[in-house]
Length: 148
Image (cartoon, rainbow, N blue to C red; front, side):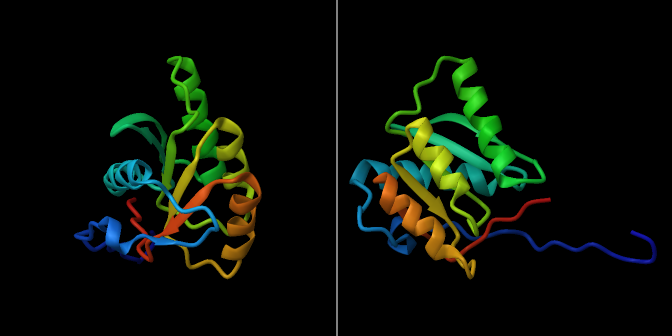
């Protein structure tokens, strides 16, 4: 930056299951909550914009460092498919909120059953409605892990 400074504070926050607020009609199962917690820890330590897929406490795939959350999601889907991993029943965590329903729609089409996102967009309801339409549970944390 010309005559500027970029500063970023250390991210010391790790949300637990109690800080996950279910915002959809369908609530996540206990296993989905465990997987969302795990996936969100991976999100915290990877480059923004990041999408992480997890299932049964295992990282399935991630898409990171893209300029678009949709591109990160597509990257993660391609990565999972290239290794033959089944996303049916997986969860998805994102460091970015979803101002548009596209990520939820794409994730549901890939087989994702639960989503974690920070929330806070003025258009959160569009993504919540898409999750309800697709039968996907969604939780928000109120915390955006943003790593650059």
